[in-house]
Amino acid sequence: MNLIDVTKTFKTEDDALEFLEKQRWPDGIRCPTCGNDRISKITRKTASKNKRTRIYQCLEKTCKQQFSATSGTIYGDSHIPLTTWFMAVAFIVDAKKGMSALQLQRHLGLKSYESAWYLAHRIREAMRDGNPEPLSGTVEIDETYVGGRVRGRGKSRAEAMANKRVVMGAIERGGDLRLRHVANNEAYTFRDFISANVSPSVERIMTDEHRSYPPALKALKPHFTATHETVNHIDREYVRGDVTTNRIESAFSLFKRGIVGSFHKISIKHLHRYLSEFEMRFNERENPERFELLVGRMCHTGTMPYQKLIAVPEVRE
Image (tube, rainbow, N blue to C red; front, side, top):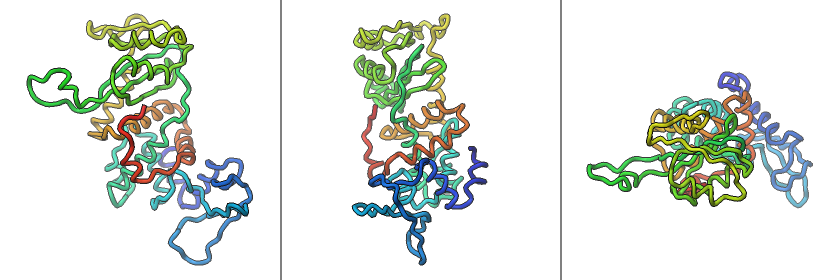
């Protein structure tokens, strides 16, 4: 569903709520607190501060909870209309290089930059795959660095890289991408990344000649028996037969073009969310129902209060 489809399909809040209910409860509405399916619809006879239509009440005597399709979800406690939420989802899920909060604010007519920024980060939170399948077959793995250099002549490499943060990526040939913000580029960090994202049954692992890969893979034996093949970028080797890391490097390149061209700069505190955005968009690029998929994920992603957002830990692997 593209932006034109969204604007045609969801002309009113009631249209959006009906769609959201089907995404959240495909087998019928249930109380999000106790799971009971005996509910009643509340019809307001007088105006109130709560403008949300389609309010329900649980009929379980020990519960009696009132709720709507947005209760307890990433949409919860938002004053932004659902029709605007859906347009934001359509923009972000199809923006190959991402969309800045300022641009989102302009497109959606939001009153403040903060509202657009908060909206975008809640959507990115739902783009994270909570239960990804391990990569298998032939997997390319690489690392890249995000952040500004320390300026000034005579700086050592360590000093020049002081502001950089490490991002690791892995891609299955003909399959999915994984992007993670990790603590450093040491062997134990590479080992943990590979263990968390790659299946022990992987057949081949392709990397560059970074010093941390051999000890990282050695530490995973005997569970990992994959053949480790490398390309030597120092000697300007990029392809040797079918041995290459070009695919994962292309994914990194797309992400960095997003930073330079769309976001201009990003906070390291929220880096993991930007990575989730690019990862999902890459993995679902051929899926014609990626809009519906993301709206559904947002139904099952818990609330994110503003204070929780700005207090997110710096590194999430």
